[in-house]
Image (cartoon, rainbow, N blue to C red; front, side, top):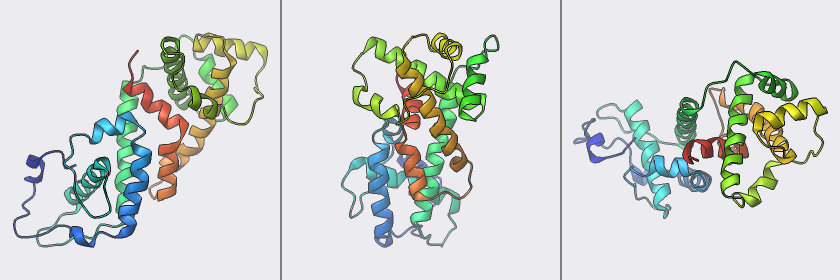
Length: 242
């Protein structure tokens, strides 16, 4: 990542141009603009990209996009540079670097999350059974929703519009009264809306985990992940303290 002038000095660029910026394709510029809109919605990525030196190229007017391109190219050069060789930077390389960026976000979030408690794993087991996933995913989404509840207790109008989008289309809960009661106790609030959000986001996360585990990922797939509600809520848990 190009974070400072000093980081560039790790490689000797005196007699070569590792990437010809004039030859960066329109597809790459378009991809950066599109994915930049999605990434800027997350405080996490705004802060992460902030120290990077912007790379001014034709077609990119947003400072964030210039920094994002700089980050992607810097990472790519660090991994592929050979003296005297001019590298080709294409759309696949952008997707690879954005995928790496999202994986880094996951790694940071996972480290910050509280560990699963052994004294009462029933709610997590219940969620894993209902959503056909594992207790780890249940824990991630569960803690994210609990954090959202804490934020909304302090700021009742927080994410007022986004909350309804997180609910999904299915209004029926596949749970009996005892199971609903257990989830109320787990969340610390008796509001059905948060159980709907919890189940809907967990269903979505299960689908996207299959995508994230792939070695080859496509542009539309990585964009869907970044735009997803569960990803937004996951990063929100990391960036906003209550």
